[in-house]
Length: 140
Figure 1 (cartoon, helix red, strand yellow):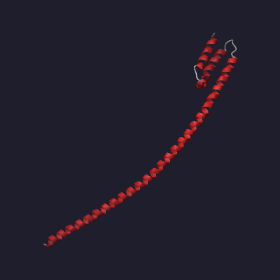
Figure 2 (cartoon, helix red, strand yellow; figure 1 turned 30 degrees about the horizontal axis):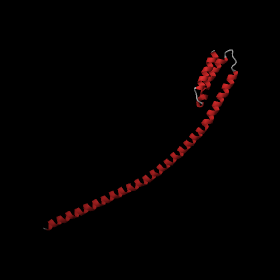
Figure 3 (cartoon, helix red, strand yellow; figure 1 turned 30 degrees about the vertical axis):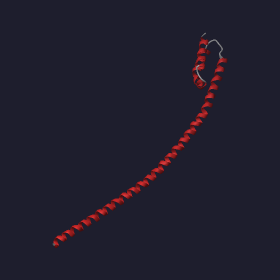
Figure 4 (tube, one colour; figure 1 turned 90 degrees about the vertical axis):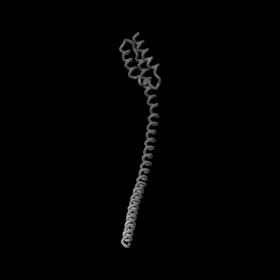
């Protein structure tokens, strides 16, 4: 009766699982089989069948994960290439912006110089006008 109950536990675990997670039950099933083996019943055929089943489940998991791993590796490689391209574009934009900033700074300096020259010219003209007004007052 005890072996029947343990077999029911194994059957329930296997029946309630899909193929994708059958290999994850390996340890649990092995523990139950070891408990069953200690009794006076020969369960070696059952152990061989379960071992074969679990090996097939492991092979299935490996075969299923191999394309997934290749896909993930290819995806990471594609993303890496894409990121490198975007970094390159950003670097080129940065260089273009630096050139543009230098041109703007040069234009600002030229404008300041022009404004300074215009201010000096204005002051010189204003001074000349003041001298002329003083000269006219002296003449009167």
